Length: 150
Image 1 (spheres, rainbow, N blue to C red):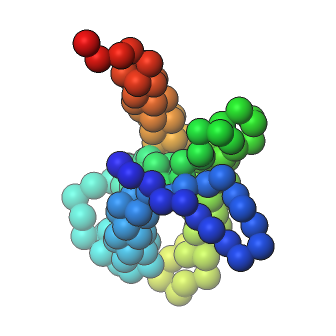
Image 2: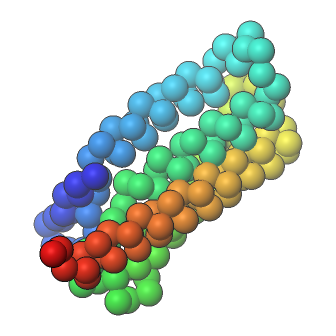
């Protein structure tokens, strides 16, 4: 999918955003907020830990595809792995741990360490799959570009 360059007032970062994945992530976050901050999950036929695992796996996988570094900046280690770093910090720490702390402050929720483990496990699997998918398709694209069409 096409990506768009990010331009901030004072900074010229070599980061590009993919708008469709940004929209998909926004929709998934709304659905996860509804599931996480209401009592709806108790009426679903899934085990609570499986629901945490599956939702974070999907959310992390889609979130990873938001960021893309420009080709010139990919020579630098940080920019080459910036999507991986941003996703890990956001999904593992803020999504996996902080969301459970916030939920524990609600009157009808309680903190469960098993939920944190399920969140982080789902995020890890989602990030692993997304990273290798992106790597596979980037390699295919580079090979296709380097081979001249006859």
